[in-house]
Length: 236
Image 1 (cartoon, rainbow, N blue to C red):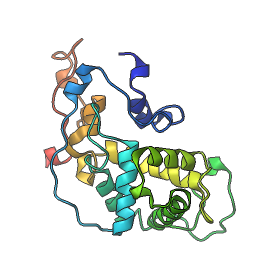
Image 2: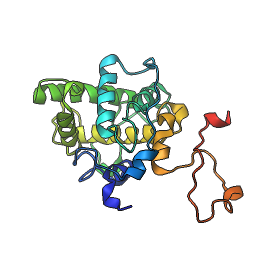
Image 3: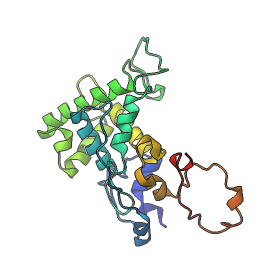
Image 4: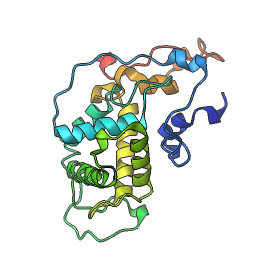
């Protein structure tokens, strides 16, 4: 399969989005064989919100659906449970800043120094979403989740490039963390709320939790591994 036919898969694998998913509208055609392998989204009841409020959740759904639109590769990001994954992560000890050094001083650091703010991850996303919506209202007249698909792509690209002017906040840093947690939710074990129906694993052919396959070497020598991927819940 020619690599240039699957720019979104390259994007989701961390190759960066410049010139790929967001820059090209986030979706291109895949050969029919891949379409046959993409599972339909499993119907799911709405999850209770643990950390996000309704406005923040609406932003998360719109953002992950823009980064991962429904197509022949997979269901949409929200249908894969990524907004639920984000909410659960922000409600966790990690979201509350557990084990993070937060005593300062918090000087402006270089990009390679990583996260340099006093905010917990939950506070960071809350402030970032508020700043993104405020900028979106100024630029487009509506909150981000109310924009049309093309405007959402344009808005995310502006955040990625640091051209979206957030008040006292870095749109580039916010986009980078939004992209990272979206990919985490798409490829994490489904027990954490994302990767529903193992859609992310199926897309890349990842077998899931088992760490050793010595018993399958001979059976699948020179043949595709086609067994069902297995998650933590499958071993419970």
